[in-house]
Length: 227
Length: 253
Image (cartoon, rainbow over all chains, first blue to last red; front, side, top):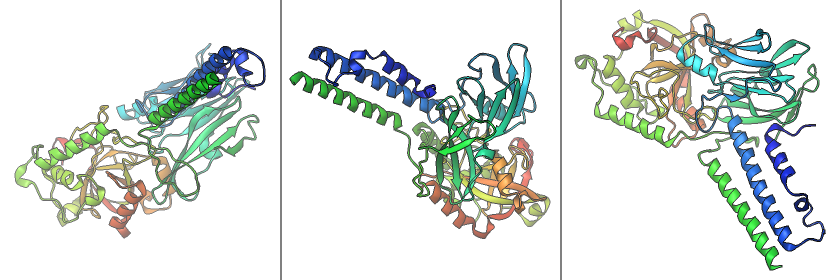
């Protein structure tokens, strides 16, 4: 079982903490100096790790709440380098999933705004790609500009690909006027991804609901509310 | 023991620093109202520099810094008050009319223009899913936000479904007595889906016309309520496309 991707800095930092420090306070005899320096190191690592967590979370937000809102998110290339996403800006604007070794286009996905003009091209390029650890599932998350754009999940298995639209997993509630699902912040395990359903209610309020979607059994996806 | 206390104090100090850092990172994020279901929402205020720029642009409008295209034909703002749209909506509308020689339409003009069914809705700079006061394409003033994006202007900017109304078109909204530039767009697939059985997405429908508001101190829900009160039963009404596409900005009206 892997650690959640955005928790990896925390896991790594904990593994770097001297063993003595981890057991500090459990009754092991050692000098006060060693214990105090150990606690200091641990505290520093924890602060660093938490800052990494915050940074990773902010980077995955859709739309980005800081910096250039049109910057791409995630990584278009699969972990093993076998597959890569590309934006094609000829009319109609679309995304392609390419099998890198032979250049074969395995899947084409239309951009939300397909007409090729400068606004739509910039919009399309501001996409996010989030691969799970073994590269068997990838989330293609278009820019969330006032709930425009779509989130797709693509399952890769035995040389075939299957595309699932997020709305088919998390339909729009009846009280919402507009809504869409975005990745937020990403994969929390090898098979589970955390998402946010961004809604505008019929009374003009904005509501976010968080869920995890488990792709362990691709034909039987499990959706759970997430805190 | 004294050293233990010292260490404890240092750890507590580090935690304080962490909390402070987190607070700093969260500055600028302002939770919007929720439906009371306990779910959270994410949003952000527009950048101060964008707000300042918006105020500056509105100020230019007020002082008539923009030269009217044909001053002799300039008309006063229509009888309807656009202050519900917030900010400098009335001034922007007036300057817009002066700049392009737009007057309150005559019955003859209305008869010539293409009339469509539409649904009037509101959006604002308080949108949790796009906390940037920008439009999708260049506005009539060529005003941009701090990062160079086209700026939405209260009183003249509307977001439309570009599949129904061409980008940059000039439209007239009778319910608001407002000329507007269709230079922004939104979740058009959601609109088409949600309004599939409504007149705005019928055979003579122009889709939704989402009117930009500068929220100011108002919440997004207040903006929505104010707007709904303003348009009332005209939410599902008519609009006129005065000119299709952006050609009117270069003398195409």
